[in-house]
Length: 266
Image (cartoon, rainbow, N blue to C red):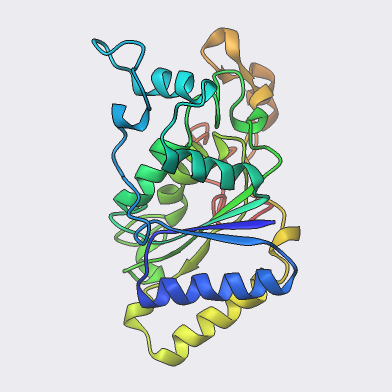
């Protein structure tokens, strides 16, 4: 079963969504689309996300209050519905236009409100031991800038660095097996033939996406929880002579591993 989370009804993102729905459905997948604009999904995380009284109105803490509400079945209907879809999903694809080097506000609101403490993560169950470790997730997005601008010597900086907070800090944090992103480079600045080629390549990839290997992240057991979750000395020693760091974020002061957040197996 595959799920799709879409946040833009714009022409190219809509076409990418339609291509995925068609290809995955043809593979006998059950596909559900959450078009966040169409359903007018609320982007702000507030006390209104809880039905009934909160436990501590004088010192409201969103994470703790929504955890209790989730346990007691008191989250509001739109969050509950999205969590239902997510629970049933084997694959989640986030389709969006990149805004200011990240997801649009409405999709960030989905992340803030749906991935609640207790449901999506706990202090004990996160990263490689995360609650969603049996699920796959991927980012599929358009950029406004051309690919060269997101290179290691481009004006926007390395796209691998841009993706680290999203893919490690959100998806991998919740335990997802993160598939390599599908990036549509500056579709609004290329001829229609080039856009058609982008969609054809996307369709081809989707034929085997369920069998793809995920990106590499450093396993949780490489860190010492009793020492501030620092990398264990033996792991440091093992990689001391290597040219590159472990990942984009855990680089050990070394050069970043090329394409660590864009290609599996590196």
